[in-house]
Image 1 (tube, rainbow, N blue to C red):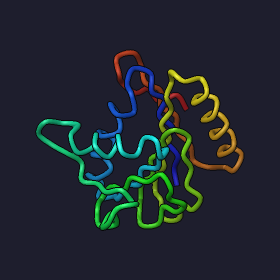
Image 2: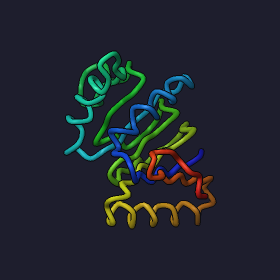
Image 3: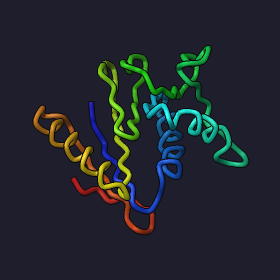
Length: 147
């Protein structure tokens, strides 16, 4: 499994996540988006309406038939089984990552506590020998691979 860290500078998670989810779905992968409970409802609404001419099919794991959607939103998931991609927002963690191909860790670069927390996650994963990549957003919104 690969871990890709995305350090946001010029954009918000809402500005970046839909595009990353679209790329994930193009690969034929199912995605789990793990985020704090306080952001769950807002993200759910956002993914239905982020574009005038499109939406991202998804479901919340606390609602019926979420397992039939290509994208699952969750504040409580302990396992990522059945998903090939995991997106971690706001310091979220998933205990069981069995079957996951790639985990994307989203970092709010405007929050020192987010940056500090995710530096620790990077360090801890590096010590286990995990495959890590680090992308930092430039001021034009493009991504530069840093590690």
